[in-house]
Image 1 (tube, rainbow, N blue to C red):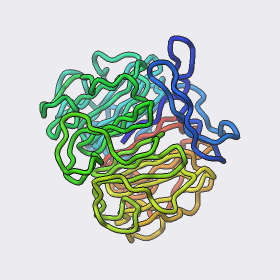
Image 2 (tube, rainbow, N blue to C red):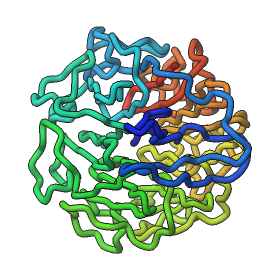
Image 3 (cartoon, rainbow, N blue to C red):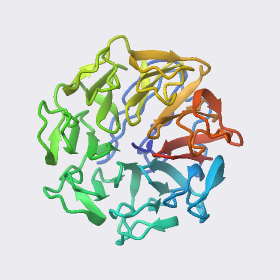
Image 4 (cartoon, rainbow, N blue to C red):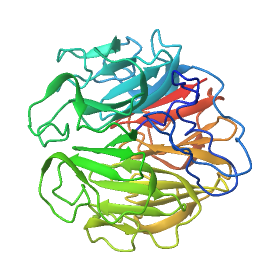
Length: 408
């Protein structure tokens, strides 16, 4: 679960730190060279920026359940909403990420806001008090990306360092302990991190040299080091080529390499690794037949990829329609999702999928018991359905029973 990099954030030399969202309608994924200490990677094609590229800061919109205040609008915790409504007092957000029941928003000034569940300190305000409107994450500045696990949070700062807080019961904060943290703490000693991503109880960072590092639960090989040993300090994910994008699911992970291919590892009980089997893998394996990929996303037990031509592929668990195929049968290999031909970005909640198109439209499908897939009937949505009232979306995320969209 990770936010996409903030478009147009500048380092103190005026150089764009990241243009991750300028995914293009045609061509292959390419790596843009690092700038400054933080570095940068961008995915896209040689033709130029797609329509719908970032135009400036925006407002997070939420829908679904508000049981822990994750809608962020100050409404009652009993609220269930199938339409997108604004988070209170946030108009200059540039990046968002959704945990199981909490949300992070990166602001244009490089600070971070958080709301929702805080039982493990995942809001980073020094307390364990739940908040149904945004609060400031303490001690952070110059942030360029936000990401979440189930109950922990991550950011990347302009100087290439990563910071984490929240639940640490399985070592996901990477500090050599299992003590929870209510305030941000530096992750490892890295100075060249370009992306962070979280799984349920894992943390991943992508470095400017294309390597991926992981800490936390490794019961199913989630850290990709060939073992099932819990890792309370970061270890390198083995057997990967140069990586440009990462995504964490509940107990599996995906990596997009510089040639537009996808690698997967971890739990595979529903075929979420896309390898044609349900065999769990402790080392990354390349997904056969999946090429020309420009973006990847992972839900609880399903996975999604966006191709350079704007088409969508999905695989893994489908019991709630999260693959968008009109059925509820799991798929062990990537299959085409019909109805969308201009996708540029994908994100997943627990069992719902979110896709943004070149026009800034949002399509949702999957689990909808609280309206998180945008259907007021609360029936599961088995095929892509356009989210009404949103026309200039730039980023998205989701958790167990809610969806969050960043609209410019």
